[in-house]
Picture 1 (tube, one colour):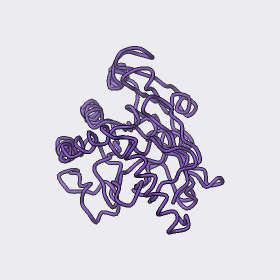
Picture 2 (picture 1 turned 180 degrees about the vertical axis):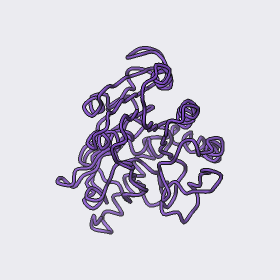
Picture 3 (picture 1 turned 60 degrees about the vertical axis):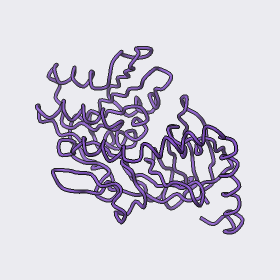
Picture 4 (picture 1 turned 45 degrees about the vertical axis):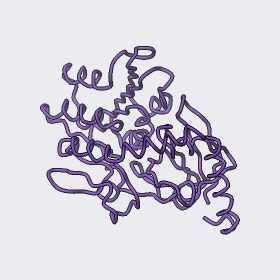
Length: 297
């Protein structure tokens, strides 16, 4: 069991958790993720590690309520525990002095991009960050990213905060103005990452994207996270999650991620009919395991 030390909403439907996970905290590097399971028969979901504190033996994750499992997770409070947290998984981000790096985070992608942006800044890069959300109330990690960036732009779809438009609008502006860019890192929804790759392909700006396809075991055994990169099959859990954006087949990625859309909708609809009953059932299952294992992690 992995105790939750802190849980608070940082935007509507978006919650940050600080979890006690000593071994993961000691090993985590920027770009890596964990796979967690809330209860014995629960779904396994991958989540990027926002940050870690080896001294306090903790990691933090940022969770957007989308489906049943993330809504169950976001119902947990400090003092609750998560059954399984496995990690750190995936290859760490490549950190070196590239020169000028544009870091783009769409939605909760800002939390995924933050640790890499911070590491790139420490490596001596000029970091230009662009984060976006549908509206101002959904913007996250602005203060944290501003602290590790030489320049930060916030965009919102509705113009309620920052600049009206998409993160790609700001990137296009930088490119059209002739800004010297040595690397672009984009993390967020698949359509956004595809649009970034399309923008940087012609000017030949090296671009990295962090992929988050369906995962089960996180070790490359199940093949669920297969992605097509440069015409070859790769596994996001062990070969990634970061890949050359100009080599990723985003159409195949979108197709694979939508394979279970029907069952996902059914599971969410069932949860929404009786949310409290399912939350209580999850808590009871977790408590039973805690008693049986003596709370061992």
